[in-house]
Amino acid sequence: MTQSQYTNHSFNDPVNVHDYQLPVYPDGIEVIANYRQNRNQETWYWSELENKTFQRGENMIVQVIGKAPLKQPPPLFAFTVPVEKGEHQYNAVGPYQRWVKVMPNGDACLYAQQHTRKDKHWLSVFVHYCTPDNKPSTMAWLNQLKPSFYLEDF
Image 1 (cartoon, helix red, strand yellow):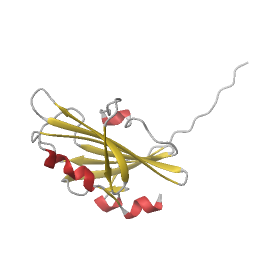
Image 2 (cartoon, one colour):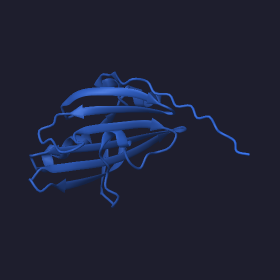
Image 3 (tube, one colour):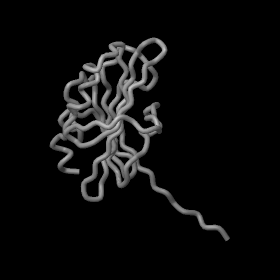
């Protein structure tokens, strides 16, 4: 005799939010739009950033609040962070890893992953940002990310 188990999935439509309503405030970079969506036991936030290179799945900041840290961004966002060890950096949220890859056409693509925890909740932050300007100064905004009011509440 087999038993079937009922699984409940709940998804809300994404809603637009302001920069200050994100867990991590995207300071130092031009943001086109921000969204929030509740999906099962997680809350997803994502920010579309200015895009001058049109690389696949690029120029996004994805933030996920859940019960465990994520190793990769949700598949919906069509990018992954490299699995090899990255360069360790630090911003106001805490330590993070980043990778910079130069594409065949000369575009520089930045990938970053950061996790922070409060009580029983984890915030996982993922970044994919590509630019035709392959200078360290164009990647410096990642060091300016900082917690918003909402990070204190989660």
